[in-house]
Image (cartoon, rainbow, N blue to C red):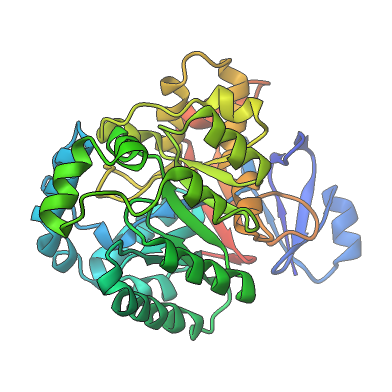
Length: 403
């Protein structure tokens, strides 16, 4: 048992002062220090310095660790141009990021306060690095393939990767399933993967409506994707449409990434099915896809979480940086309210979306916590300052262990 005594504790509902926390793997009690000393007389006590703030560890729900080798190889500003640059540099991107490269990206996330992440894995090249990560990991094995003639082979590869992740036996590692997107996965494969997720109670995620090219292709089999699919995959029409795609997930709550080009009807479906939207503002800007309508997302009572995406469409895997971008991107929203929602989107709301017992400083929750060194007494605008100032992180705890 351990006791930690900061100046301030950020809980989902309030900022606590003159309170301490007793914990092992989970948070056992939040109370004044003297009370905890009496109840847990053998606990190791750590009293933190002035202006120390204890808050939940951050949760990055969507990151492509495998593509962490990108520096300046890829083209930004337009989705299709970026996609062609990914294909052109694919071998260099994959082979250019060793296990050490991926582990470095994971460590960088840790140093920025990320104690849990969702790794969307296309090839399982990141499996070993994720298994060895200090953080909690939801390992999303990604299914991709729109060609019916390749369906069996692609699904076999997917199952092999999924089985490998299910064989991992370590605390805080959770196998899961990702569907790449409605335009890149055959409906038959989607249904088979969903059945597995339901039978085995696995979390699911999917990219959805990231670009105008996706919108045009799914609606009319036209637009910038037309040449792409005809030349590279010999397909003249989309294998499904957006309505059909979303209907597949009616009975399984799913994390849908981007949702920038979704229609009002699609937003209504996402809301009624209680899906979560993953917002990646820097990626959306760099690939020229515009900004999600967060007001509509909030008005429809849709849970949204903020994530970094991968280094193939970002320059840093840092959720404080991501929240800062979102704070300025959504200038139509009230500043303080947005800042508070963004903090929730990388803590309590992300934990709920991933089905994890973490994301908040509350009794019974896993002790995934970070300590920030503030330079002043916090005000009612603390959420804004946390995002803008990116204070030093002096302590990190994962499952109660100091990292």
